Length: 161
Image (cartoon, rainbow, N blue to C red; front, top):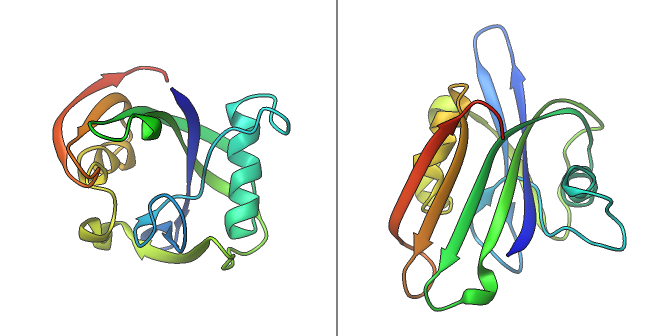
């Protein structure tokens, strides 16, 4: 299984909570809102946390700190086995720099009540609300032919990921 990362920036104002999503502009997941992230690079990264920090900086231009691991999601694709992956999901409430557009992603802040689930990966509607509510998860998602729609899934709430 490929080891990959996702990092979501979260901020709280007086009356609202927001999440930073980024529109994928090229490659895997093009045209979908997602967190910043990508594959672990064995030449650059000592561990998955290093990969999360590096990928977030490359994709949206911020240096994240004090990351909270909230989920490990395993994805299985019926007709694209090379896409199978474990995704290590982190929340960041601290970072340096302002999110900015890169060649790969265009970031935008969303109110937690206005996440555009119809423009994200099909699985997000199942697990993202749970981790935003404070749960820690391990989950498996099985995508059918074409890799767009979930045909089966299971989610376990855990104390630690």
